Structure formats: structure tokens, C-alpha cells
Length: 237
Image (cartoon, rainbow, N blue to C red; front, side, top):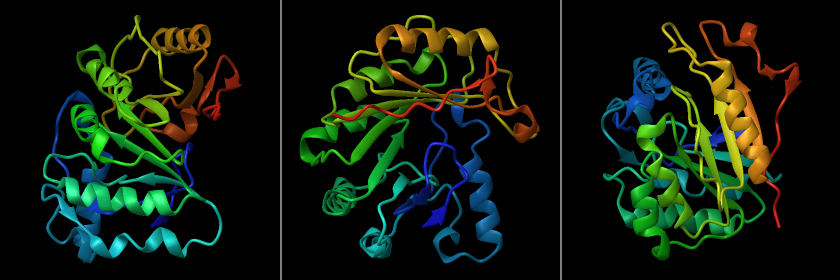
């Protein structure tokens, strides 16, 4: 586990590592870059590089050791619902999350179809937040898959936002995170795209979190929109 600089979480936990590119949002994957660095540093978890999806049973007991309640981003360096992760291992990860009820686990995937497919074989305790990445209209169907899952708190990570999303159906969605791409060659994000999503969230009663403008210097660009920091979190029942 590691403390995280991601604005919407506190720490990361990676019971799986490795992934492969699935859609446009994956083009400049930060996890791939970080995996290469960790591999070069001799980290055992990353000795096989990023393209090999590996499961790590040794990680499953870690959340039991955290004394204080944490908000945890699950698999910042992978995708728990990658096709190469066995359902039996996903169930083990869920068992840990089910039993560590004091922590909030935020699971994010680009593979919403497998979330829906596996949903009735998983136990969705309220401390498990399930999200899908939606970078443009070409992958908007991921929201429908998420909606059909048994997760009690559902969210969208619209990062990097690569195009307008003018007709979002947010029924059953509790939280929307929006952010621009960062790095050496970030693809542009227009302010009107962000504003439109913010208005849709307001109209549909969904918590809106603006993570960053991104760019080559994301710290300099900041995360204010209209001079305001939008950092709403899901309203839990």
C-alpha cells in the first residue's frame, strides 16, 4: 500500500499488477510508466513489467493491519476486472473488502462488462464503491454495465476527458469525477465540456468532483472551475 496524492482518495492498494490498453484513455497510462520505473528499481511486484497481469495473494491480508479507517483506491496499477484476473481471485479481494468494513474501497475499471457479468457472484457490502472510466462518447456504454451491478455506491471517472459528453444518463450514479490529462503530451480538454458535465450532475442530483485541468504542469493549472473548487463526495444512505 502507499499514500496517494490522488485528490479523491487517501491511499492505494494493489492486489493485482499489470494491464493492457483498451481504449483512447489508456494512451498515456501513468501506471505503465510507473511500472517501468518500479521494474528498473528492482521491485519484486513489477519484475515482469506492466503487460503481464499478476495476482498477489500476499496483499490480501494488508487491509486487516490498518488500524484507522482509510479511503482506499484499489488497483491504481492494474484493473481488478481485467480478463486475465480469475474470478476466484476477485472474490478473494472482495472478501477482504467485505471483512474490512471500517475502510472504504474505491474500485475503478474500464471493463464494465465484466463487472456486470460477475456481479451476482460478488458480495457488495456498502464500503465498496464501484466505478468505471468514461473518457469519451465511444465508451459511454460502460455506464450501463455499471448501473446493472450490485454496487451500492457507483461512480464515474471521466479522466482524461477527451471530448464532450452532452447526454449523460446518470440514473443510479452517485458521483462523477472529471479531470484533464497530464504529462508530456497531454490531449486538450475544453472548459465547456467540463461545465456541461457539471451542469448535468447538478440537474440530476449527482455529486461532482473536479480533479484537475491537467496539462504539462498540472499543479500550476490547478483544479478550480469558475474560481471554485468542486470536491463533492457521494451522499451515502
